[in-house]
Image 1: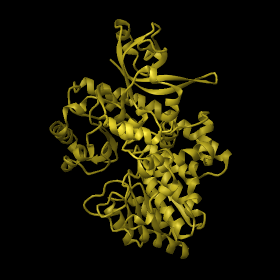
Image 2: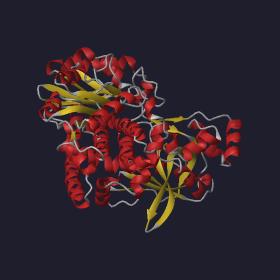
Image 3: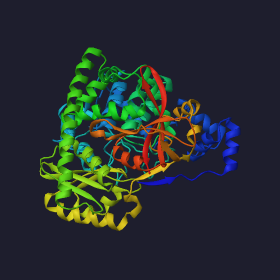
Length: 562
């Protein structure tokens, strides 16, 4: 792991902001590193207001989309709310459908089957709409590349409104409206919304047309915050406002479906990290193991007893998903080792029997192990389907574009994508992907980076600093939890391995006579021998609170040690 210390702002700037905000120099430095250099910017950062959200009508085609939906409601048309089967898609479908149902009864939802239909808008879904008299489909978290499917729907007299956040292709579908802040011709001020975020902007526009205010939409923000966390979009700008207020809803008055999940996991107060690792995997498990519609049913349920039954079923899906992903990860690692591919620039593995619902998770696990762009393939009907994951700083979407002649379809983001190809093209694709990555990736990107915000002394760590750091939340891309470095620390002699196979490291450290402070390093158990051999070592860590028998104590969460 390479340690990279973030650029330190000029001392006069730190001093200026420190005086202006009446905070310590360290806090001023952390804010400046996040692009916050004035009192007003700091106020918006620490106290995000819903009034800071942009006017939804700044988004290209928003006025057209609203007019078409208003026309559908007035004419009593049947509206089908269509979305992807992951967390972003299912939360978006739950959000828009429940909003529309408040005043229009003729609204239904449709989530494509991951295995029968695959990602995005399917011809089967359009046939369903046609067979059941739907004249308007609103697609969420997908659709911006569905040129053929939208044309097929138009032939059947079905209009499309697309709410997406993925990068469009060179040509756009012939839809009534395409809401996507990543469109080249869209001047919307913030282009990092998730799919559910774009859906929220649509209901915000619909609400404004009816004379409602943003406060009327607060109950929907638990869905938006969950999608923001799960889809790993930057928690900056508008996303920060939506996530901040959404987390307040989750912890004070969550929808019945979330309450049912929270009751299952028995956790009092959730952070956005908990949403990512506790709520999101359960919602995702429905689409991975059974069908994404189960997640929509849970998220729109208003009866707690029924919601708890749905949540119990989803809990089982999640358990099954964990077992499968562990088994397939083991097989995939074995495949890389048996083929002696440890020294490649990429990991590309395939087994026709691997469960399509977990190959994305397996790709993430392989990336953690070998830290290089990774693709995991399985069979999907007549074709092979893959999930791609990347390493920080490398755009896997661009790399796939460089292999487009071997691929049937692909889409996604810089760090995560999906694709399909014909089996006879698999070996050619594997070779070409390796070549494209080898020629374009900087060597340092293949070494895991640990960014460090600031070097501090252990004596600077106090409850007051922890209280301020907690106010930097919600954390995520663009606003990660501050990581500190302390040099020449010592273990007090009580260091030990803990957990199964002693894979975690537990220390108590001091520095230049500072008070001892507890430290825990998850998956750092193999560093214990190094600690025992040396008098002094350096640590990279975040600040954490350990709650034990009702008492909270500061501890360090170790990221790395050298």
